[in-house]
Length: 387
Image (cartoon, rainbow, N blue to C red):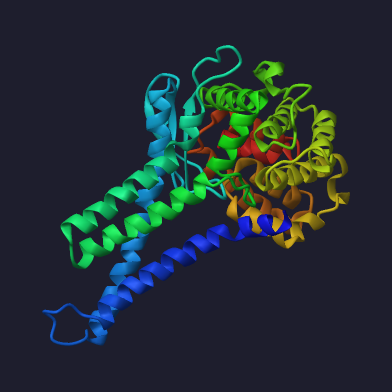
């Protein structure tokens, strides 16, 4: 089991290595084994040009397959009764509001290259269509990869067209396969793992439906604290080692924070992070650690232990999520209680928060985080809001 977990953590690197190796073989063949109508091997300048083209094509193919993957979730979701909410590639989000109007937002989530979020159909007899929605992205990657392979065999292209189809096949096939094989990676679980959990457990299907419904309500401007309490209860017999189900527990902690029920929030954090029968993804674990630090600062002020911020893993996570509202909130709180020497740092956090708020997909989240930040140093946040 430990060996499988170590392998799972290395899979993203394996994917990059495999694609890079395949690309290197392709370029090497083009350089050192020129076609029959070529009189000699390519010059150094031509070799550099081929390498540059290969790198550019690789980046283009990467983005194409991210779009195809999320497009697969969208197509299969819409085909099974879902409604469009948002479509993200990288940090760019196309979002449909409650009024039906579309807008461009910005949002980044470490461990993901994109995300397609839909409003789920109603549950019937405790279930709803979710398998095709989850597997749609990987299926489209593999289908397009297969089509590119067929085109390459049938059409026998040369030059850039050949390289493009080759990359599309290799990257699409490997991406699709590594998303279909059930794997729980460091920060998030992949589509295959989630699908396996959904097939096995009715509570997981309910938990996924609740997460999609909560996201829908947040997109439409509703605060977590104003949503039904039963949406944040995983169920008495639910398997909290299932990351889809335990995510509801994380949403519950977020709801306590939104309602300023800090004692309940701290208790929920302890339950989620210190109970052996509960497993949450690395992403949620890092966010909860930062929430716990915020609660410590709120309670103890300058006497709070800020050593977590020196932890190598936490620093890396905060850098990756530097435009995530709750991360900025905790970073601001830590800077604010350090005293006058940290005023510049606290001000920079506020500037970053306002930049994030201007294009963040959920106004409800921003309102909640703004209130929490105001508890640390009210004059700062009030001045920013009025300005």
